[in-house]
Image (cartoon, rainbow, N blue to C red; front, top):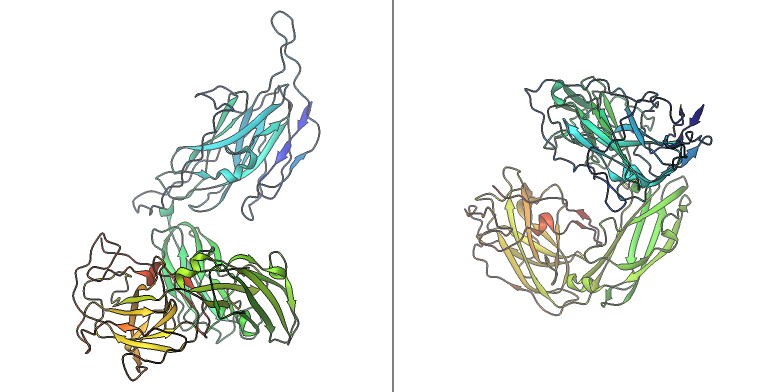
Length: 628
């Protein structure tokens, strides 16, 4: 007599398999309790914390775990195609048959009781560090009563740590409600685990199941994992501009200047740039799972599937990758956003007019709106109502036509600290906004005037660290209105590479270096900053690189004509009006401020993303480090 499995999976494919009826011999761990079993009042053992990534050791031999132990009737596991889905349904294939009733020694019938057993299987592998590894767990109840509040967990026993997130278990997890396994039936669930760093040997883990009645069982399983230093691998390929839109590389289509990076597998992220033929190459890579990231090319070509997982396993499977470049959607699809008023007060209701224009010859359908991707911090519009543009709605724009929509929201008190309110969105068919039109609406918010200060340095060794002698003296800096682009004033940096402009109306400003200097690769010709009372407003440090000579704007150091303002700026005295050698300074190894300047490196960390009107937009994604 047999009972059919009650099956639940998390890997997108349900598995149902006939198992032996309760009471027949199956190979599982005993139901003894090696430690105090969890009860309904105690949480299940939690999955181990994810370890920090460690580089492979060159002198360690390659290790591949032995074939894993399996249950008597292993469940066949399909290769996973994506992350686990804890919402997959539980499927009952047939009613189970409980075990025959137990008889007490005195001949009376024993009370019905649940029992638990657990077993697990893993595919043959071997797998790689960083790769998602599917483990199929079977929890059976050979008893004659239902097992209630059943939960499951895992823990590492030896070797490299193997992590299964609590979300993989669903209601079986320590923070779930538990499930009921009926008498004589089984539950099967496939979870995904990962090894984040290699620790001399392949993982050995225990899978654990327990219920409300203090039943506690465990099963030991070896995970077949290939040592990262067993061999080395190569990631190589070509980026190309698919000019004839035929989906493949043709002669002359190599795309130069595409930045390609590899995440995972190494303590540092290697970065390279495609050459004149579009080729790129990484060699000597430890065996592991990596994430390839390809940025857009300098002339606007957008890389399809720019994020992809690569399994560097020592074969040549990752040695001929093609990165197809297509023209961005923004070439033929335009989006604009503008507030209906120029100036707001805190607490006002605000409206944004959105206009979508299809400049192409084909209709555009399925257009999705993505807004507030930065998370709602700073001077953004609050209490936003996107109307017809709200998720999951989509809109269509016929060829050669425009469509207009309205977004509404409120002006928060925080916008008054910046003197500006900003709200940005992107528009296009799909989830990846790369190449989509991404406009932003910007308006002034009434606020008191404040000071602007900024320090400028030349990062000679490109280490994102302000080293001795890198602050720039005597550089002419133009200050521009961030709303209109109008020239406001000009001032030169002092001996510590610093400028200060006092009593500016609160709001958004652009800083433009003149002479043989230019902003770094994360900017166009200006660096944007806020002036106001917010924590980091008006206090910026800017990384400059040598560049072509830029003629100075303005005939004097202060331009007296500044429309829309009522207080002239007060410029600090210029102590070094003539360019001089870079001043040598002593930098602190612990302070978050610049020695001798008091300026926090806002330009590298605090602003994040600034989307502005007046014909310029910038993304500031940089970081600041100090010498240890």
